[in-house]
Image (cartoon, rainbow, N blue to C red; front, side, top):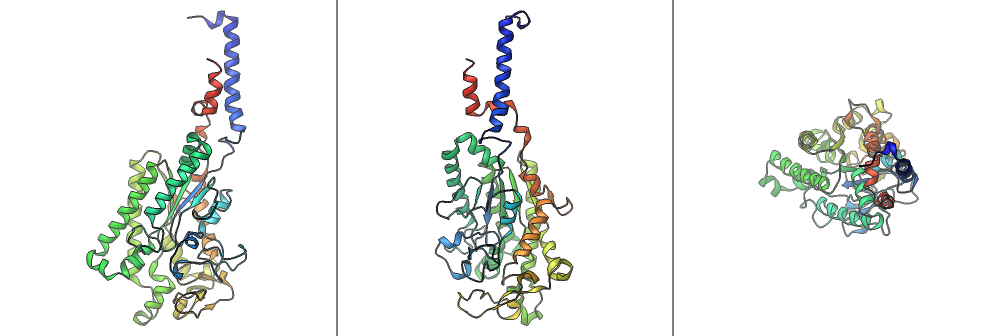
Length: 399
């Protein structure tokens, strides 16, 4: 073997190789396929808590749609978009904090998937049986994700597409409808399963969905746990005669059981799955505190819905598109925790998004969202660049 120290020619070759390696690393980092300038995509799966308007494009019932006034009334959007809010929802704020544009609904025509996509559907559940035929259930949302994967591969090539998928954050907010409509309003389901068995079935299917996404390359997850369901204005209204408008404890108990089971599952998955990272928080207690102590957090009402009718605004009539047309609308939604009979106001969405983004480790963890959206600098290496086809083209010049 030649001794490089004794060969001027080899000295020149070594310098050229070194220079070329540096140009690959720093030149690639400056291109628009670069890692240093890239953003981290956001993919969302779930129900009406995070649906940006997918249900505008499917055949369903009025209760599962919100593309009419007074939804979106606060002026951020020029017209109602399908969001179950007086304005934005939590994932809109998260996208903003992550320096992303508004993430489009999957079914929006000509949607650009570069920065992510939102698959959520109002009324959807973890179980396919929940509101079957009227929503885009979680299994279908996962199939739609496969379409996006193919689209990204066609657009960027396999290597870049895999990078987008692995670096992205996967936000999941689902489960409420499984317990409200799928169980409490379904006597047959209650005959087949006791509450513990039913929660186990929901969590089992949700765990499977997480593993499917992991198998497709997802590594960073965020979960919005269930709120105290029994304290929704809709449940207070149903419980009005029995308890004078207190929270419906059976619904809240299911939410708590779900949250506890999910916490256990996530801890196990973090141990079992390599590079699995996640963020979650105690949303149940967080919202309960605002329901019980609205003035402490800048609200005036934690019980009644801003938009609706009947006791506590709990009859779901907001917008007048349903069987009962009559509804009342409050003067200032920012004073309220609840926007309609089932959904919180934009202000709640914003406060929660801030808490999840950079909240203290005592309230959100094991990672907050800001940490999940940070780019993994360890990949900014020569070794990573060598895996890039563009970098390999440069190396082929040395042959």
